[in-house]
Image 1 (cartoon, rainbow over the protein chains, first blue to last red):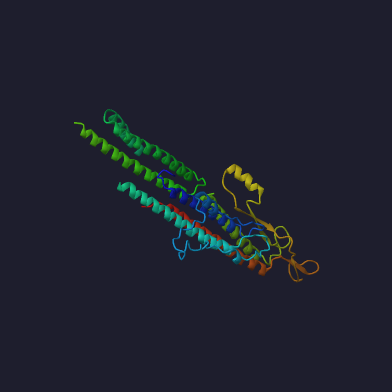
Image 2: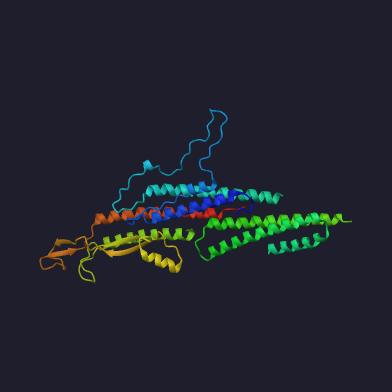
Length: 132
Length: 96
Length: 146
């Protein structure tokens, strides 16, 4: 994938793979929403991806103390820990349908963003090659 | 296929440039490298498409990315071939 | 992990909820059935779910077919032998016993309706996930489109 010397293709490809795994976990969770004793599956690839890229928590340099380095991160759209109700289910199933639905929407949006991003990279490369 | 035609151009250029100036040997190398990369990318793309066709558990985005990579690699190799042939013809014309 | 296993997981989820709704229908339809071919009143049917991770047989299948079965829901329909049947005093009934009591199925309408609502909600959730999977697949196919 390094053929064109641009790391973006590798990165976005890994990003898409991670999101696809999360989609699989959500599918398993919702399919098993009524299975007694089922434990919710979680996929957390962002931390590993950040480590691979070496871009964990980069802040911009500032030349003036009044400047802001980077705005506080929105931290994703998924429910914060405090919002999640403790499981009230009698059948020991740890899946929270609302949490799962929010995560599904977020995953879908990110997947489409990633696909669009890589399509743009391809279009740029195509222009560079053809225009040469 | 694409690779065949491009390889013909490569052999022509290699045969021609051996008698001509030493500087143009670089072009053949360039084209050779582009072809090697193209072969690798093409093999990957074929493998992914075969896996998908066989009903195996491969991600759609993986297949589409591999196919697009192959398409761009072919474009690149074609452009390089054109430039190489053009440059060779320019050099050939200079030998009077 | 890929397209195929995701679709199969959701499909099993949809099937599971559909079976659950069918069982509720059967229970409600037979709420007054006092005579069955096996003798005795109709007994309430229940659905038992198990995730493929919980069932060791699934790993066995996986080894032979190579098909992914992780997270797939396996559904079993069984008889509820725990809930007691209803005893109603009706000596005129053709199936009344010597004391004039008729044994009616252990089906409770409220329980069945609650189950139906829950199954419907779960079915909707699965359908939503399936739609999202479809959207993502269509978007993936558009990668690199001129």
